Image (cartoon, rainbow, N blue to C red; front, side, top):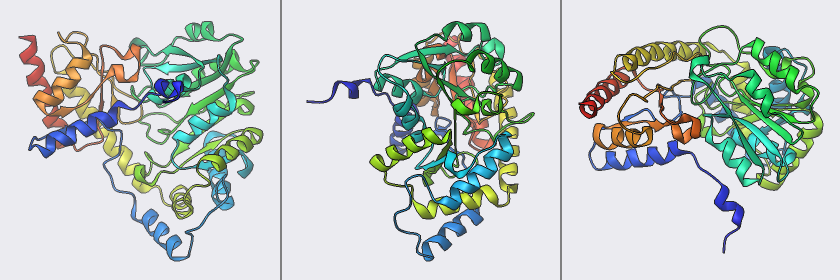
Length: 388
């Protein structure tokens, strides 16, 4: 009755765990939410005001499938300035959330049987879309002893004539790892003469705790084969607004625009106008949010490292930690379930992000310091109880 390919489509465990946690709360349980990747800050007031003004001005109808021209121009200016590249509105496609850039990019560039290299552990939708398209997923192992970057020689060994698409993510979900400029230049050397596409997922580019963000699109020879994926959800606490964008060669942008026409028609216009205001308006609230995330990061890393059997690297970006629980006498997937059911702490197993996540947990510290400390106490007590 159903298409065979639908069985190959995965999911995001975070939403499943969130639903389970909400059900426990309806039963009267107290649950600390560290499972969902969503800032707990409100969308800045000036962005909401811009949306209201756009609504009142009548921006409630269809717009161009690629996005409003002035919005695309603003995105091109901001991306060009921050990434050190030359982009115009013709390189930009605006989408309802950033995931469509990932999906449409692969639909436009990947055929059945092609190979796609992607980070593992990594955002689960990467592998899901590869499988759905009938391509071959080629996991690239992120290594804890490299601060969750990867071995460049290992990466080079995975690239071959069947490789049609490479996915990079920095800062990373779920590990908080960051690729350096030196890393990206070496990756560019490996890829620049290959006939393939690179998707660089930079949705956490503004949530960085040291140094500055670097994009492979700025490496010589790479812009013409790179899709930059970004969006407003994380930086501006706009997850529910569903606003993302891609910056790519204009020939590919035309194909992605046709996919938008076929699938979504267009992205909500008054949301686009609010998003343009977010990019071009004051950034002080972003700075304050990142500063608070840094404070929370330090609290949760110190607390996790104080739990016997747990060790945790300090992430350089995003708002996740990826603690090693291999010395806890329980598989990580079971540990995640029991932390929710028995300790009231909602976390994700590292296996939700791929096979190389086994032995780890992912915790989002997009929650208050008070709740983080409560979760650490509960986790410590539970893990101590099973270690005897």
